[in-house]
Length: 601
Ligand code: PEP
Ligand code: MG
Figure (cartoon, protein in one colour):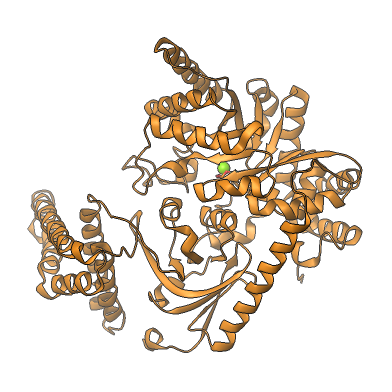
């Protein structure tokens, strides 16, 4: 394959999930099974120890393979056990091991990375082999690689240092990987899979990092160190860019910085927000990572509307203990001030972090499996620890707790019972537990259909439109193959949102919309029209949503939303939104932030 050595400019197209453009050097991150692989830089003094760690992992992998071979021979017969011989030979191969150790020593990098570099090279050689049988042996290399990486994962990975211009390229990125990388140094992100509401996308937008996902087969073509341009505005990735392409990025970035500075200087982001006809709207912040905390106040958010607490889990899914969690929630409450923070119970499983359970991620249908509240109820020790930490932090600051993915009142009652037991236990221990409002995420169709009943059991609703779209339309939110079916403006979604908002209003409880829809001015306008008065979004999105809400009239968007509810499909709704919002307020809703016209026929 000449493609690998071809250094001429190549363009790839994917789904743009944030704004901006950046140029840098590729940092490939391999997802070895469920773990991502980093390029860990070592101090020269650490290199020999790393080589010993690698050798220990090889010995461990070898012992495992011998045991597996014995078992296979016993249960399947000798003729089936030979496959392990091939793997054992590979593990014992002097050249392979020398190559890995050379990379560790010469580049002063961690073993995981060295294994990847060497086995990637081998795989590239196999890719070029004409003989099908031999080419398929590459799966053996992949198996052995995985085994080595797992054997290595028992050890500490050390500090991750990224180069200043790292553009992360991966097949798929787990939120934990993003959380662990030094994100302030990540210039941009490009992944083979993912959609608008995948967590890579949410984080990238939150941090203002250009990101393009759904690039299908890009990962295999990029090599660490390659020059790259990510143009999120165009949904384009340019590998080996020409000097002209690099220059264009520089110009655009300078312009974007200038605009951001103008916006920040021009506006009082803390003044109460009202539409032109005087309807009050509250904008809150969604946060995941500590680097975002300071932006809550910088962008004038009224508290934190959603803290995705699963981001407290470490790379390996290790649970933070009660003290660590209490400290984190207290810090969030401090950042959020009088407006408070809504902490979401760990939303583990599904497309989220797998959680500290080895079998997680092996479910046949993880999005419909042991995720979120189900996971917490099934693992009461996890729920109890989190409840205690939240209750204790609530004695120091204003904290609400929201339960993700509830299906009905039973989920709420069971969780509340555990929380109250922990409150009593804390009091028995002489520890202070603060007042806690408990809310339900409305993100599953069954919760919408029983919203009136749920509204009587909780103190508030949080509408998670990302999952509501996923589950209402039966479209995997992280699968780029079906991204065309992920239509936030589908009338079924809008009817669900209206119903949930109405149920909350009738029960006299507040509701906040915290899915990605809230962060886009046109969608936010439709949400206001449907009756939303509180929106929560990535802090950096607040100024532009604020500007559009200030300029519109609630009466008018209510009429537009009512007409949208009458539509038969998402195309019709998008047409109304484009024509009516764009027609009435062309300065607030220029064509580039409206749904694009459909080319019919
Ligand atoms: C949602 O589902 O809309 C939501 C806010 O939560 P998450 O994206 O974390 O599932
Ligand atoms: Mg959700």
